[in-house]
Figure 1: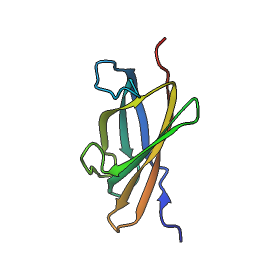
Figure 2: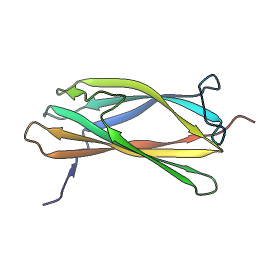
Figure 3: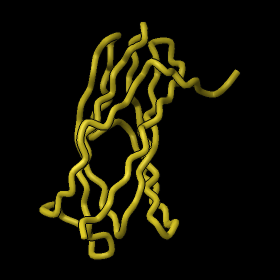
Length: 125
């Protein structure tokens, strides 16, 4: 039996992606992109989002991996049909792509993972 199962009916959509130069950034990664996501539970189970993992890769192949508990400090509990929308941002040095996954559990404690759709962040020239 697998350690987790991928539940295709837990869907993540990228609602909006914007270059946000007003956000604070470190000198080595001066380009911030705000992203807006919605997680939708299309299953017949109640799911609780427990964590996330992002992999941000630039055009030179450098990767930044971001993992953590919850989503923006919360552990949303999604009943069938519920949605959870939030926004956050990535800071990059050059054109990059972001992808990852959310980790959830159902009421029986079984682990569920769903992918975050890959999106490109292109630094304005």
